[in-house]
Image 1 (tube, one colour):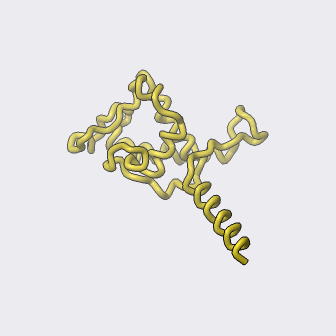
Image 2 (cartoon, one colour):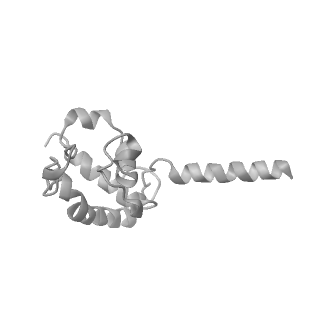
Length: 137
C-alpha cells in the first residue's frame, strides 16, 4: 500500500509540475514548422485582440512601454523594441511572464498575470510573436 501511495503521489506531482511548467509552442498540422493551422490562426486573432485590449494599456501600440496607463507605473513597462532585452530572454520566459505575471519571473508584480490564458498555447505563442515583432522598432 505504501508503494502505491508513493507512485500516486509522484504521478500527481509530475502532473502538477507539467501543468504549472513552461510554455509549449503549438505544432503545425503535420507536427513541424510551416503552414499555420486553423487553431493557430484563431489563436493569432485572439492574441491581437488581447494585445489591443489589455497589453497596449501599459506597453503601448508600438511596444515602447508608452501606453496610456504607463505614466503612473513604477517601474515603467518593458520596451519590447529593446534588442538587448530581446536577446536576453527566451520565448518560454516571455510566455511565463504573460501567463503568470512579472513576479513569477522575478520582475515587477505590477505586470499582472493572465491565468485565463493557461492552456491556450496558440494564443500565448501568438502573443510572444507580437512581443518579438517589436524587436528593434
